[in-house]
Every structure is written in structure tokens, then in C-alpha cells.
Length: 200
Image (cartoon, rainbow, N blue to C red; front, side):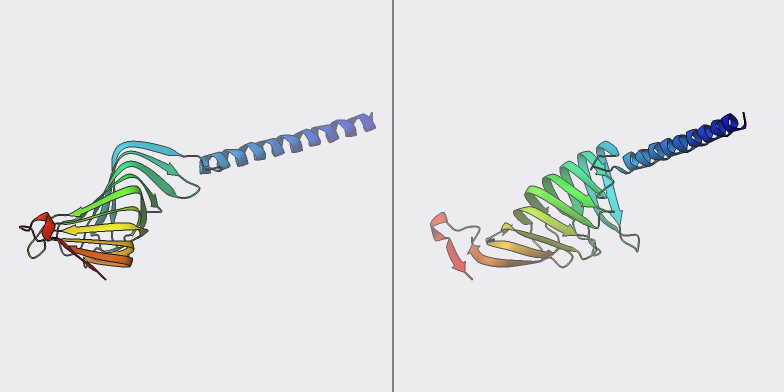
């Protein structure tokens, strides 16, 4: 009788251990699923605006997109049909960046605009309209810097520049083409035959 009681207690003890292990595994797997293990999204949004501010409270950039999917494992948000407005402290017109898709990392300190990218800044006092066409651009908000390794075409009235690879300081409006640079001067009132190219 004493032996049977001990065996009963032993099996009850084993049952408690097995149950505890099952609860632990379920909780662990649940936490992993919630964290997005395996690159699963945890949220999806439609027709939204994501704004990022500097430490001093200044609006740094805004992403306007038709759809956004957040992946917690990479802390990245994927946007489709993205329009990125990049602001500066001088209060001049923002740069408006159009891209088929974009990925924002963390809190938006880095944004990769993917595919064919068109950038435009409206004219303001002392500066004419400026447009840049390229692809696969990385934008670093904290550094006010834009980089790409792709072909770049920059246009202002009367001037077109081409190159491969670029660094663009959009706070100071300085475009640095890295290689194969060509500048084409196009006087607004000149005939097409009067165009002349200058290779740097």
C-alpha cells in the first residue's frame, strides 16, 4: 500500500512537470510569433502618413504611402507607392521624392527608396527648379544626406548633368556626382542644334 501511494505521488509529480513544460513551450512559441520570428509582419496600414522629427522637434521628413507593412524582426516598414517629403531648417521648399516602394528602418533615420526615383524641389528666391532622376536611393535623415550607386540625371533650367553614383547634401543643396560626369548646357532660347556638351 505504501509502495502504491509512492507510485501515485511520483506519477502526479511527473504530470505536473510535463504540464509545466507544455505551458512553457506554448508561452515561448507565442512570444516568438508575437515578435515576428521568421520575418512575419505584425501590422499593416493603408493610406497613411509617417512623420519623423529631429531631436529639436523640427519636422525632418514625411512618408506618404498607399500601404505599409511593418516587420518586427528587422524593425523595418515597407511602403508601396511612396512619396517622401524631405524638409530642411532653412524653410525652403522641401524635396519631394517619388518611388514605387520604400523601406524605412527603425524610426525612419534611414529610408531606402527603391526602383526608379524622381526627386524635385520647387524654385525659390535665388534658386531655380531642380529635378533629379535616379534609382535605388538611400536617405539618411540625421546626416541630411542622400546616396546612390546608380546613374543620376540632374536638371535645372539650361543645364543637365549626368553621372554614375552620387552623394547629395539636401540641406545645402550640393550634388556630388562620383564618376562618368557629363554636363550639358542648354540655353533656354537656343535651337536644338546649338546644344554643346562639356565632359568633365
